[in-house]
Figure 1 (cartoon, rainbow, N blue to C red):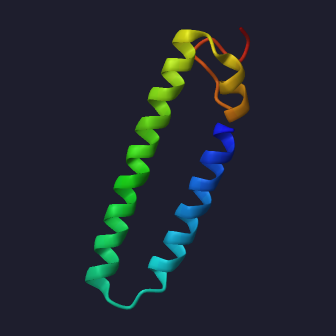
Figure 2 (cartoon, rainbow, N blue to C red):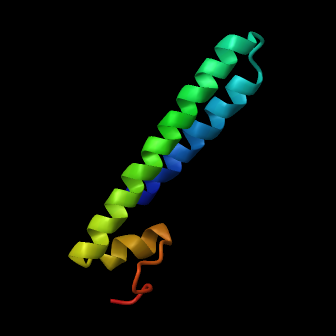
Length: 76
C-alpha cells in the first residue's frame, strides 16, 4: 500500500514539474518550483525516517517492497 502512495506522489510531482515548465511568468514559476523542491525534500526526509523506523523494528518486508536496502541488506 505504501508503495502505491509513493508512486502516486511521484506521478503528481512529475505532473507539477510539467505544468511549471509551461508557465510564462518567470517569478511565479521560480516561486512554485522552489516550493515544489521543498515538498520533495520533506518527502525524502519523511521516507528516510520511515525506513529507519522499519529497520529498527525489523519490518524488512516493507523495505523490500520499496526496493530499499537496509544497513544489514535485504535479509532478516
